[in-house]
Length: 117
Image (cartoon, rainbow, N blue to C red; front, side, top):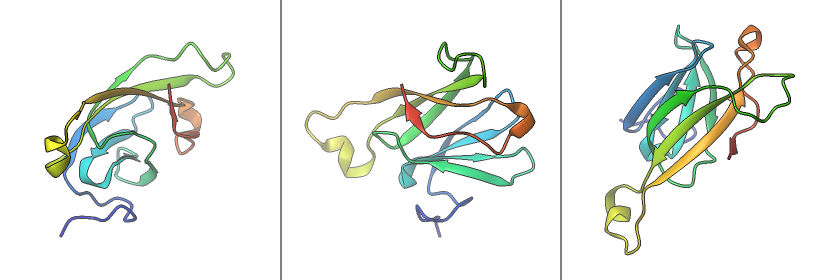
């Protein structure tokens, strides 16, 4: 049985995975319309649901230019789009979104707020 949107650590069509510079594992949990974040050992850290479309791909890249140098900010590119009946919707468009997160590897459980840039 697939995990529901309020079940941390469970998935309904995990569709993409990436590892950031702090060795956190990011999983695009497509049908739950969220991205879940874990430690390498599998401990759940967070779920982000701020994406406009269900996520199906993730790619990590360097620090953002924002953040003022106090706490490094990582960025993840999230590809997303509807699924099932949503694909047949007139005007359906896949989306690319950039999410910023805390990249303080001494404090890996702290991701900060989910913010779309």
